[in-house]
Amino acid sequence: MIWNNNKECMPREQMRELQGKRLHKIVDYLYHNVPFYRDKLQQMDIKPEDITSIDDIVKLPFTTKQDLRDNYPFGLQAAPQSEVIRFHASSGTTGNPTIVGYTRKDVGVWSECMSRCLTAFGVTRDDLFSVAYGYGLFTGGLGVHYGVENLGAAVLPTSTGNTEKHVRLLRDLHVTGIACTPSYALYLAETMEKMGVTKDMINLRVGAFGAEPWTENMRKEIESRLGLKGYNIYGLSEIMGPCVSYECSEQNGSHVCEDHFFPEIVDPETLEPLPYGQPGELVFTTLTKEGMPLLRYRTRDLCTLYDGTCACGRTSVRMGRILGRTDDMLIIRGINVFPSQVESVILSMPECAPHFLLVVDRVDNLDTLTVQVEVRQEYFAQGFDTFEPIFKLERELAAKLRSVLSINAKVQVKAPGTLERSQGKSKFVIDNRILK
Image (cartoon, rainbow, N blue to C red):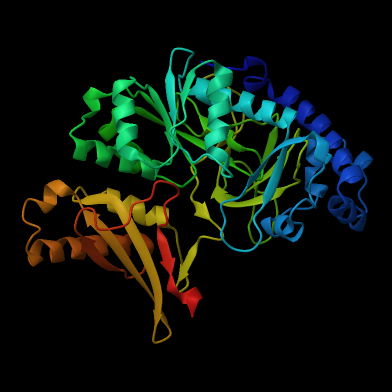
């Protein structure tokens, strides 16, 4: 199913022409309304009339999260305060938060793009959709909420917390869809099992998961335990929120809402643009946003972009799965390590549960990596009450990690339920090196 055939299936030349017109308009808007951008463009000897096509985007300056923090709270706001109807803020915990204002038109665009996502997942007016992202300054809850209502489906604003009540509502109200982080979906499945509620006792069929990296193995795990079809959704508060890209029924990458958000992939070191099919850092320019438009915003997310018409009929550029983040990437003894790599290895072993923690430290001037992982309950009950099977599993997992990561990691197998659970974004890494 397609929500907006005119935009989602637009011929590529028409899309690029539309993007070029919108890019010129947004550059002109920023030049006259945001001193930060006007100064940057003047330093580069660039005027709005120099931007005549989407190809000219490479002439424009990059924007970073630090720029947002340096201009806290309203320095990058382009719309007058009287036209801003909502503010969201980043979930970061260091430095100034990033404050993002939305006009009424921005919220309308957000809702429409979110409806595209939900329709691609197979959601219709007949569905009852539980939104289990956090409501508040985080964009997840309200972002999906407005999209569900715009589509005409019913929304259940469960948010996070009180998971047992959530399970009862899923069962008793015959909820058919859910939006949450992948880690919370697994926590929900755990809670169901503890309550004696099986997947056959609920009606979930669609899951919209995002806000943190997840793997194909994790998708299969969630689908198996909740009895639904899981789809990836991507967004970030600086650009809009959930709805920037989304999977379709083909699940061959996530379609970008290109008429509103122009994607690029650049080399994170040189910042030179990279061609389709080559991994690098994801960069977005907002083409229609009024409250706080951004030029070439460096997301720090690493992925690959793909072109070509999808079998679903959509012509938009697709994002590959997020491989990690340039600022979350761990460098251990000169080796780049991403939590997603570790997760893939862990979930390839049937004894291991999808709950893990990476602890990085420095001992005698050498970096160390410890991987803590829980064993599944069914295996724990079959003899993991003695040391030998634990030691055996630790050795096997350590060997697999060494093969994939090219470094040695100490593995600590934990009992089920030992590691702290998250009802929001999970924290997979503790890097003690930065504390010293």
